[in-house]
Length: 45
Image (tube, rainbow, N blue to C red; front, side, top):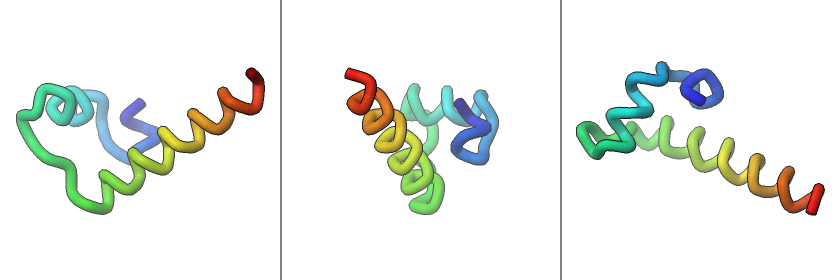
């Protein structure tokens, strides 16, 4: 998952545990990937 966001899996885990906050640039990348994933799943439903 980290590769899709341009970061490591360890960093994603730290975001999930609320240990650190992503930069706005990383937050936008995360949102874009999640939206694309959601839309792809909707297309197959």
